[in-house]
Image (cartoon, rainbow, N blue to C red; front, side, top):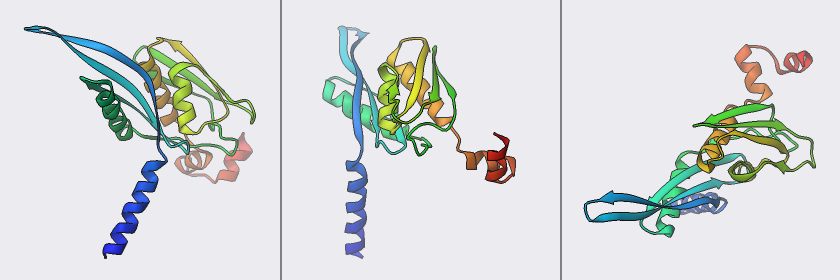
Length: 177
């Protein structure tokens, strides 16, 4: 029994060690209180395993390290599964919204790379997407753009999922396209 628990713990540690985290933005924010301004830090962190899982987290603390740590924990709670094609791209074009930000994404041919900027690029790279065209529309706020990217990635569906929803075979779906 104890050996099984140790094995499970080792597997969980291996899973945790594959996560990468990138800080998108650190801001010093303040709250006005009776004695003056109370300063703290807000960190926007993207967490991903480069194999189809990614999340965006926000953490606030009185020091930068604490804010980043809280952002990583929040990002792991907000994980989204991303269906990847054989070419490490997305299965179909999609649009995501987050606040006033809008992100448009289209699949790309192998060798194209990640053509995107800012927070969108960070989210796509940590999700494991290698070939994609993306464009930020509207707001240039990094948090809203990262959330819009997660929204777009969360709305992606594979051919098999679409075929199952429609109640037809995958081959008939391919014949229709």
